[in-house]
Image (cartoon, one colour):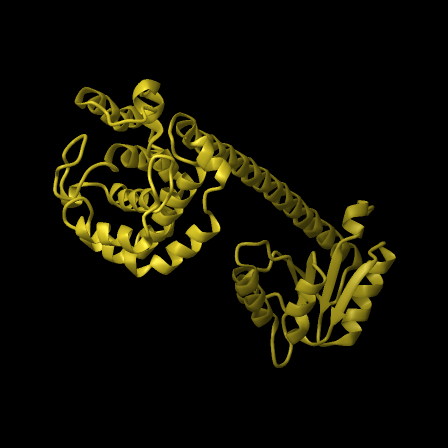
Length: 361
């Protein structure tokens, strides 16, 4: 029998409490060209040897003191779970009961004592062919899974990049700075976690909040950028930015964009039902809209703009409390105040630059 090079390079472990049997099997294998052979007379060492040496085949004696071959297979099977257990049982008494128990324990084939060299080598060869094929298929599957993960990650990164740029599109039309968008979305993320939303929901709010005013790209510049107070007719046009934003984000079942649509449509609703566009009241307003409303207003109040001074934090918080039950969800205002230290820490690290403020003029 002529074995293939990859088979001859396989790692083989001999396990038998009788050293003479190990020496005999080792001699057969080396004469046949096998070079990577490990052995032990202590069955307790099998698990360590198996994993440390990436064993491809175990020739395992069944009848051993202290720990028999069945116990060895059971121990290995528990560790490798769904992997292929490459065990060739060595036994002097191949009764039907022994065969059945060995197979149910994970054995794949048998050789009997005294050894027939030709039969031993053929069975080893056959088992190693299956074992190495199994390893090859598993490696291919792992490679494919890795490629799929990489491709999925690339698609996710592309999707998030598009979403971020979509959020920035509104900034170029609006008089807000990029740092306002950054701050309010992170405030919303913190508030979402404080409100007990799941990590996934909170993360989606972080990514979706920058799109809350995306609809402003559909508002004429003479209204959007008007320095003075809007007329009643102009104000009605301005309010349409929420429905424009919702329309832009509509028609998808992607959870992140569904949330972005909800935020765009509902962040001007008010707790008492006096908001727009639908006049929703209380918990009929999506929680992501209620969260973003507080985060947006707080940052807008505490930020300096060419047309307004920055309110002190105390005044801004007083306003939020004054508007509890009117504009804002009372419970969320309390939660926002409970995390105010974290809010202010993030805010201090992401203040507007002078150039940003000039740009927003």
